[in-house]
Length: 237
Image 1 (tube, helix red, strand yellow):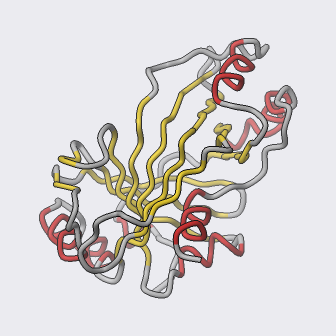
Image 2 (tube, rainbow, N blue to C red; image 1 turned 60 degrees about the horizontal axis):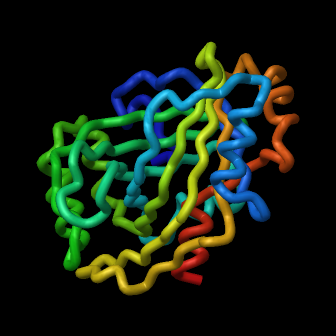
């Protein structure tokens, strides 16, 4: 089976393909970055309030998704479960997401999952129960049988957009990563990055030239960054 998800597996047409430029920034905190965006000639505004984001990344036993992201494979994907708000307790309105990259552009496939409890003792069996109870295409469900939770992470995100909505910027702070085992988990092994923020610029691929002008006002370069790779290396290696 191809490691990069296709429409045959997801049984969905992809959303529009877009570009994401990212930076792991030191020497600049979230408040300074927010001030920079308020002064940006692109006239960025906050389309909705900031919030905590929680992710469970799914990968194979040999971490093939991690390896593809680490090496920058042209075609690659990440599978994750995402929800907002509290990390522990009831995960409300969680989404199963597949982020697919082809070269410099990417898209996302999403499926709603039932609410579930994420707490001490969470295990691979709990993951499989969530998958089995969800309304998923059979081919997607079959694909997920071979995946397990490889990493949990959590961060606080601010959202910005230009007035014409063509460019979006997110600022992430307090990135915390938790090791997750196949058995029961108590989330004792964790790492929090207090020294960096992650900035992402997102836009449709036909706007790439204009994105250069947007990014030129940032006092750092935007390239490629993966929280998944950072997290795996922080808590496992």
